[in-house]
Length: 197
Image (cartoon, rainbow, N blue to C red; front, side, top):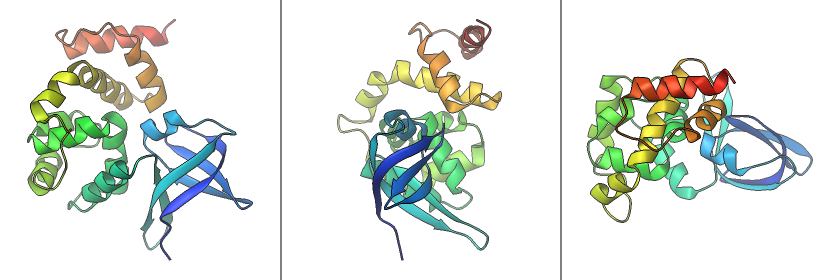
């Protein structure tokens, strides 16, 4: 029986998971960083869900917005893209950035996310380019609007590749000056200094 939505009180919360109490039962959901960032222990949560069934596990994935759930399900329909990779993409890039990159054929943006290689990124673009909904203002406007944010996403992805959690990486990237022209290596070095304080 599919579970379409979960509504309840947040009991516990991590970087990419949440336990929601529903009728006395604690339900563990894997969530993208954007969803985890909107929740706090003791608050009410209403999440759109996808139940992923494997022979050895049942995993519930939760999303604060329906369009994130739709994009997640589109991503896992691509051969070679599992739920963890799809969740990583939705954590490193927000819905507008990710859908805009796919619709715009920007596989280079996807490759910056840990766990996404060139072949996987190109397959995602090839399979989903005509299926995803880009940002309402159009791809070009979306890219201009999110240029600084995408630069931050590159830093977040690089820090996660070095072993930092999504939350730690995002906190460090948020403290960077909004200078998308600086080389990625310099921005990562500056972000790493945040952890030595």
